[in-house]
Length: 225
Image (cartoon, rainbow, N blue to C red; front, top):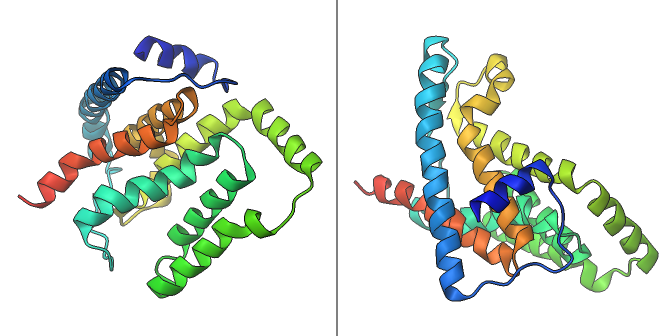
């Protein structure tokens, strides 16, 4: 599975028919990618963080305030809305794009609107394809363009996912944005792994949410120590 992932990184492409997994195959998939992620995370932290700290380019982590309890946010909320934004639209449909935009709206305006109003607007955006007719040729053309530029989209979404996590730090300076791939290297790798699983497998979106949760699980446990 990991060998196929590395081949995919060299030539990202969309399968016409995603692969199916049985329960055993799913456990193997999640287990191998979980171990691979934490292995990369440990090695990259040991390689990059001392250098960044020596150059005074390692920003400080911040604790985000939220109306949503931290445990629930990490267990349910974050994996679902981040996967909806960054992985769901990797396979183009008007529904996927609308849900992704709704989740993005929720993220961007989280501290602007009251929670109930934010949810109402996000749901409205997600339901737009249900009551707005878009000509079939437009959808077909958009899908063709999406597939043609899929490698750019795949890496673009992974990098954007990393940039989002840069804002988990405080006292950011312009210099931090120049070295952001090293600061959020782990999250970029995570985005690449989750994106691969999303497009390669049937029910890949669900699998990516599960793996996202499993990666966040140590953070949940540490927050209760």
